[in-house]
Image (cartoon, rainbow, N blue to C red; front, side):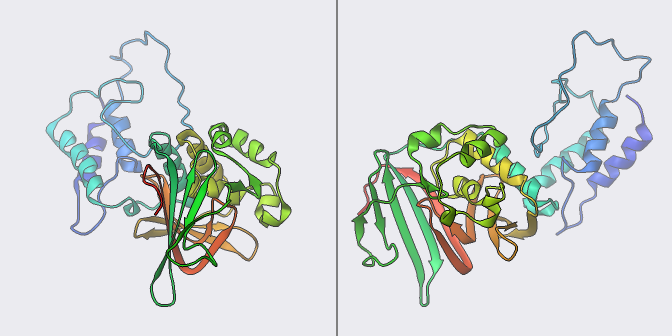
Length: 313
């Protein structure tokens, strides 16, 4: 080990925590520099490599840090001050929300892509969607249930009798094209291949936004991560593909996640709150629905999705 003076200076910086202010984060530049300094070996004493080093490329943003080096090597024994500083940096991270560290809109979506890979979709008989918006006098709650054989029920859909569950034919759609459970499960898990597959679906120009016609495919990607029963690997690919959309911005932390601004046209953008750890869209001002429609609000429309065995009533 070397550079002890630099290590000491870095640990002091990491260990400083002002009450009510964000603490150190394992992915911050200072923390990464500390780990590099700790694990650096003197060339005169370093043991020769006995096996090839794995590639350094990382496809998605690493947003969790551990105590083991990238190549599986345990960190050397540390002095008490260094060990304490690393512990403070990691522990303080858990005391503050993700918003404590500024991140771009692209980074938020890549974080969600990483999380989505490891979050199981669940099982059940019906895919249940709940949308909640603010009405003139009280919240408006709209629900739908879709069985794997295509049967569909809804409650409080537009123009329906309030509070009554009705069966109605409303298949899932992407850009106007019908898409079933099996087709969703067969979508590619690579972001570029996913966009190519979506672009090749039969579609209706009336159901496409200007950004979709230009090849960005913003609306179907948002639908895949918001309301459709998309498999984990495909959801991850959709988040990653959406991260490449030009003009995506992070407006900052809000309740439930990070508020992203995503352009849909030159004059229209969607405000969408994403929880990157749960890999889900919690609410949006423009909700692109599983049935191919859109719901708009001056504020937000919240959305939850789940598999359930409970029959609609």
